[in-house]
Image 1 (spheres, rainbow, N blue to C red):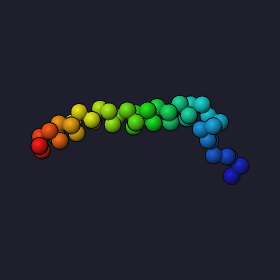
Image 2 (cartoon, rainbow, N blue to C red; image 1 turned 135 degrees about the horizontal axis):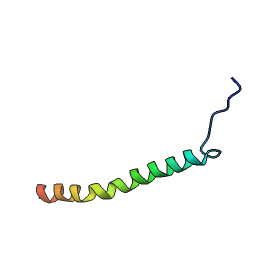
Image 3 (cartoon, helix red, strand yellow; image 1 turned 180 degrees about the vertical axis):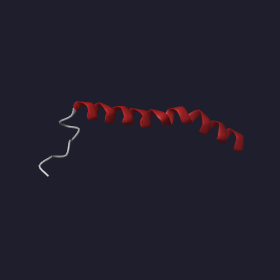
Length: 44
C-alpha cells in the first residue's frame, strides 16, 4: 500500500499520451465538418 498513483505531471510518457488523445479528439471535429455540411445541404 506504499505505492503512490502515477500522475501525468511526474510521468512525461503519460503526459504525451494525454496530449495525443486530446489532439485527436479536438481535430476529429474538423474531419466530421464536411459530413455535417453535406447532411445540412441534403436536408435543404
